[in-house]
Image (cartoon, rainbow, N blue to C red):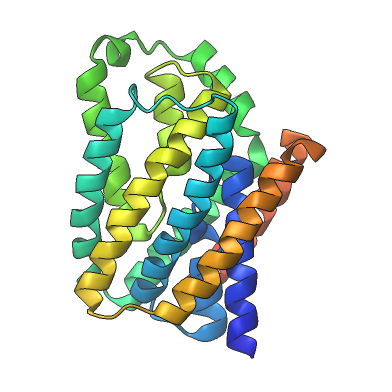
Length: 256
C-alpha cells in the first residue's frame, strides 16, 4: 500500500509540474522512487521518462487547443534530441547507481534554485535584453542541431525530458513567444521522453508495467488539473513554490 501511495503521489506531482511550467517528471518521480522505495536510479529514471510522455502529451494537447504549438520551427531540435536521448540512455546504463543518483540530484537542485530566483518568463525577457544572440539566429539550423543534441543527451542520461532547456532554445535562438515556446517544448519533450524511456527498458530488459500504469494515470490527472487551474495563481508564486520543492528533493537525493 505504501508503494502504491508513493507512486500515485509522484505521478500526480509530475503531471502538475509539467502542466504548470513544462518541467520534467524526473524532478518528482525519480526522487520519490529512489528515496522512499529504494529503486535503482537507472530504473527510476526510466519510469520518470515514461511518466513524462503522458504528462507532456496532455500538456501539449492543451496548448495546441489554444494555438500555441509550432513544431515546424523546432523540428531539427526534436530530431537531434531524440537521437541523442537514445545514446544518452545507453551511456547512463554504465554509470554506478551512486554516481547517477548524485548527478540527478544535482540537476534537480539546480532546477529548484533557478525557479526560486526568477519566473521563467522574466528570466527570458532579461536574457533577451542582456545578450546579443544574432550569431545563433543567423545559424539557426546548426544551432538547433547542437542544442538539440545536448538536450537529448541530458534527457537520456539524467531522465530530464528537457522541457525547460528546449523552452530556452525556442525562446532565445528561434525567438518564439513564451506561450508558443512552452507548448512546442512540451510536444518535443513527449518524443524525447518516449524514445529515451524505450531505450532504458530495452537496456534493462524489463518493463515495470504496474509502476508505469499507475504513475502514468495520475500524471494524466495531474496535467489536466494543472492546465485547468494554472491561471489561478501568479507565475511568480508558482515558480517559487515549485523551486522550493525541487531544492528540497534535490538535496535529499544527493544526501541519500
